[in-house]
Image (cartoon, rainbow, N blue to C red; front, side, top):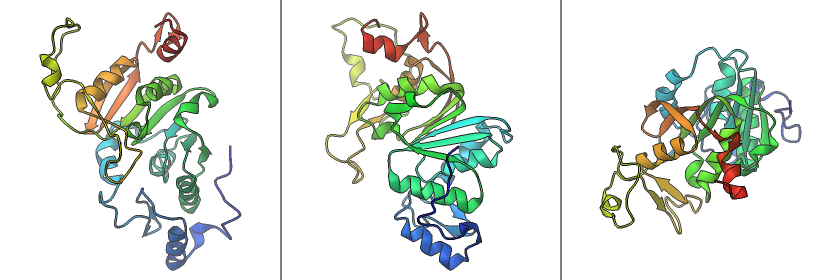
Length: 266
């Protein structure tokens, strides 16, 4: 397991730092997106979403067992490490957090060391998830989907890592209504495409919320349709943007859906 410490920037344990020194070290690590409580010092107290992501976690946490002794966890797009830390504090045996942003990884390592939890962090894209060996009891895929140019491709790769449950969160826009749609429509039927509740993804050509990585934003029906299409069974919807899923028929004739697509046998 990789060390969570960073000797180049750490002199002594951050857990032992006085509050003013801890606040200085937090500020040195740049702007935080995860507001963590590090021994009474918050990392993002002025977050535009409030106490984020704790405001979401309050609704999600009951869908996760309080005792995760022996469990393995993969946190995709771990950011500052909030969910990785929560899982380790519930007793998970091994937690692996991955992200492509060096700043977030540095923040996550610092937070984990400050709180005295042993977590492995790696720089890795969701598209390279096959580099990770094995499967995990819990896979967190939180706040990443809408930042991807190829979101469904990524989701189809993520399912390869799920042994137990997927906890999935994405920003949604448009209708949150879910209707029962027919399994098939003729070529000449178009009326359903004008219905706001029909599964749809909004493409952001330039920027949304001053973020050029906000590419595809689905409505609720699209999220649930894509999860099912990837072979996942939705078992809980603890808050408006989060779903808990079990892996269902994620293979066809023993081959993952994404591999069938790539080799032209779908």
